Length: 194
Image (tube, rainbow, N blue to C red):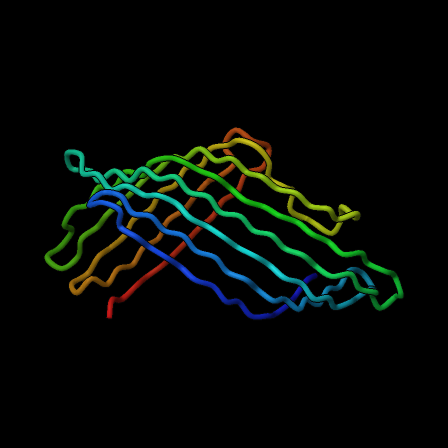
């Protein structure tokens, strides 16, 4: 079991390049303190993490739909310092990285549901390329297999928009289509403009 805390600092940039195309990029650096337990052994170690992401997204009306083609990339690098656990076993430093480049399109069908609520169900399909590397010498340190190579991802959900611009949304994603590893992701989000 692994628990930890730390702090993160980062920045984000968004730019509307044209009426139909927007660019965004962001980066964050984290300082980590982790406490791990494996069987009767326990230990603490320091680490650092870099996360960068960016992409281009288009918005194009087509008949009653809104199409959102996009191309995105994110990457994460983490380094964990060496330490000696409570049983006196030296645990070497570990570095790993993971990331994904993707391109695809999402189709949105906005319509007025009631006089005060508009609904926007959506569905999307994306091609993904995962790149990962882990120099851990003990394979049992990582319970989740490394994602590598090409696969596809399908998304779907709905967003409800209220007067004043407030919105609530829920959706799901099934990743790893065409690969050995499959990943289900569920999300719920809301925002209130101010």
